[in-house]
Every structure is written in C-alpha cells, then in structure tokens.
Length: 191
Image (cartoon, rainbow, N blue to C red; front, side, top):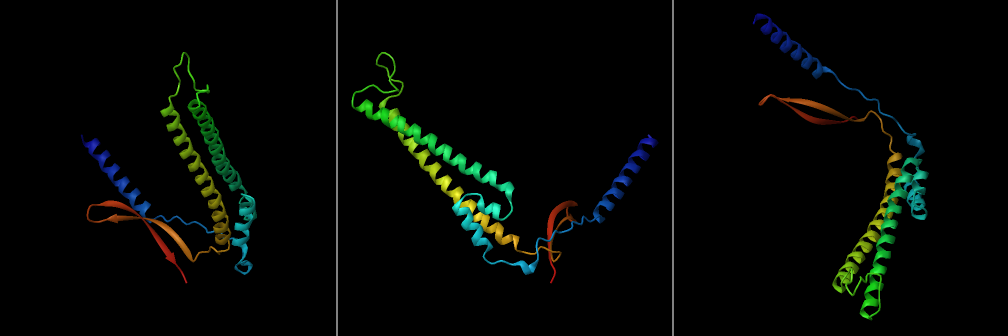
C-alpha cells in the first residue's frame, strides 16, 4: 500500500514539473523575407490579373507559383466537363421529348408500348438538366474570375516585406477560475 502511494506521489510530482516546464518553453519561428522593399512594382498585380484573364494559369506563372497551375486547370476543366455532360444529356432528353410529342419513336421508348420514361419524366429531366447546365456554367465562370482575383492578390501580397515587426504567437492561458487551459493567439506589432 505504501509503495502504491509513493508511486502516485512521484507520478503527480513529475507531471506537475513537466507541466511547469511546458509553460515556460517558447517556440520561435524565423520569419522569411521575400524581396527587397525597393523592388516595389505597382503594376505587378494588374499584370498578373491581365495574364490570368488572357490564359488561365498564366498569372500564377507570372507570380512564380507554378504549383497552382494544375489546380486552376483542374477546376476549370471540371466545370467545362460538367457543363458538356449536362448539355449533352439535356439535348438527348429534349430531342426525345420532341420526337415523342410528334408521335415518332425515341431512344427512351420501351418494349410493347411501355416507355422507359413518360412525357412528364422527360419534362422533369429537361428542367433538371437545364438547371444543372446553367449551374455548371455559373460555377465555371466563377472559378475563372476567382483565379484572376487570386493571381492579382498574390502578386500584391508578394510585394510586402514580411519581417520581425509583425508576429503571431500561439499562447496557452491558464484560467484561474476553473483551472482549465484556454488556447489563444497573440499578435505583436513593433514599430
């Protein structure tokens, strides 16, 4: 019984000391400085936006962020793919509906006069595919505009000199009321 109490006592003491040391340690991260403050080019964001508008991804290449180019083409390619898919399906269903209203056979005719899709189902499918086609077009246009904005913003932010005058430090704060740890952040501005 005494050995067990001593074991618990030493365990509590060692955890208390460990927690005390962990509160004193400070993580220091060295900031990286990009470029010189004398190399400021006020037309750089507009050039990046212009290049991205001409050819998607070219603004990212102008900013030397080559790893972003596959994401730009993947996003725009996905939008174009879904637009094309929904447009083709819409045209198929619309053609079938036109043929059926004229009394001609269509691709959705069934066997023995029992159609796979009724006229109401064809109308509903047309509405659904048209809505999806329009949404795909809207999303693709939004992604195109977003990549232009991203290139311009990135070019603008690359011109800022990031030094030790602005730091963000994570901090653990002990709440004395309920003895719980609160996670916080501290922002320092040095002039």
